[in-house]
Length: 94
Length: 490
Image (tube, rainbow over all chains, first blue to last red; front, side, top):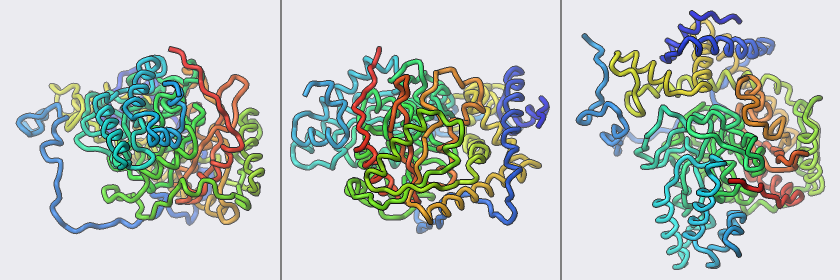
């Protein structure tokens, strides 16, 4: 499976990760090798097989719609852009 | 007993000494910190210590024990937690720079459960970054080394947890296992490690790598200690929607039950031509031990075994790429590129602060989930996952449990595989299937290589049959007592 540098750039953009040129070249080689390896899964007959998202089937349990304590402002204590209890980010609307 | 001797005792043994008053928890905690001060630089097991918290907890434990109000066998016992496990007010980083300085505002259920039982948390243990690795070489903070040979890897991703127990620097540790990350380092370091059934132990407050595969479990010196720690952390948790509401048996009470008639399956695919001779012998030691104790050995087949590694790496990378999208520098963690706009903030924070392996897996996960490739890779892998579960279900109609090597080799040298990701991924070939099928698995030491490195063998059980595999492992351990410890160097 060939991986062009433009494909790597596209994946990096989807993943929101900036990569140096040498990182991209290294990843190009790695992903090519790994994806070639996982191609062996195409040998397996999966006709009529349902996908399995969870190993153990569980029912989603529900709770009563009651207000419970939440983290609130405490959750912002690790925020590098914490300004007066709000999250400051770069401007996104001009 | 001399100071150092206490540290070599199991959890049950030290619990007896604490109850008798031959030692105090405060004394044990001091001894642990002394060992850590002397040896942690060379071993790299602990990333962070909570001396004040540990001393306070130890004091409270001593007061309880003295007034006859012990909380149980873990009361006063010093343990460590893998850094993925959030500890309120104590830095938790998953060994990543992207969480440098992160102080969790809440605590993981497993940590709270240990504290409810009186265990004393010494600190946070080293690991591969975000649990992505099999050698602990991917930690962003410090190398971690095998106490049996400092030139060798302790395994991963719960390398620090295995080292802390093996050295010993504490009496038990919690790790996480997504593709073998408790069992493999346990095998490499000569300790016991158990991965519970998926859903047996709460994942609330545990940093997620692959949510349908992750499980928390104990690493300990012996099987009984593993049973005691598992008892404390197992059980339903309303805050984890994948946590199963099912009674937790008394694991320690059934350890010594007779295993005559237990049927143990030996999968032919795990003993294929080319298996390392020492590993094969170590498995044979376990098989012989079980036979001596009355178990019946049967040959079985797990026909999809060779597809385990590729299936795992597609599923886990896909889930990881989704789980790790939250690390964007906005709500927590350091920020990079903030003056250049939002996109730059995301991309540069993640680009500069994630390590190489994490980036590799996020990119792989993004690829297999992307338009045009989803059906070919991710959907197909999920279908093959069901085939794994069916293979095990068929086999468990005939046998009660499965025995196999934990890892194809003993601990390899640091640096030997780090430049070849595929070579590294193949370390997990024997452990991965149990995660894909959600089954419990325990690894224990059953032999040594010619070079002196320990070798582990694992027993995989039916869903929620931790008691059975602990029972079998206990008997193997009784037949194969290895009273050997690594010679530590500073």
